[in-house]
Image 1 (cartoon, one colour):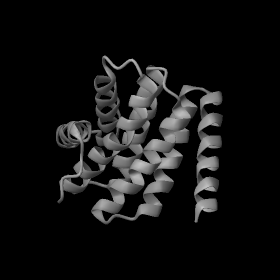
Image 2: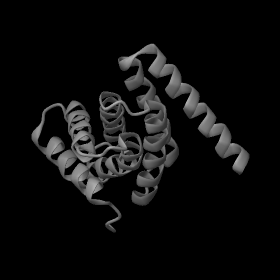
Image 3: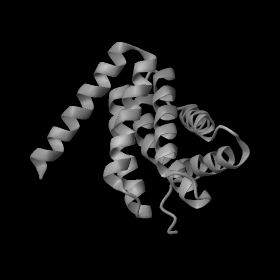
Image 4: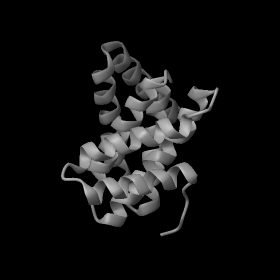
Length: 159
């Protein structure tokens, strides 16, 4: 497998592999691992919002590659990693809507790189981002829904 991950992505991959191999509850372990990777990656950044968006896609890519390498369900890895990143973004005060767009785009790229079903992964990522936002607040969920709808409409206009 061609190495396309940044340092943050590789860290996410290692953390996710550890979570997959060492836990009974793979999904919850990936949520925690990806959240922790995001929070660690942001430590010391003054521009947390920008850093969150940049790291989000790489964190998802690491989790997807880890699941593929371990022979685990890509959908579970996507769902769990997205939830971890959205929760982490909320904890540091980043825009969960913009982070949601970044994780969906990261999911599309990562699943495309490993030859997985990209459309299904995008659907899982979008749904998971909304679910994670709902756990934060109804206004966060509304923001994520709205920005994802806008992003999709924007992509359709570009096509």
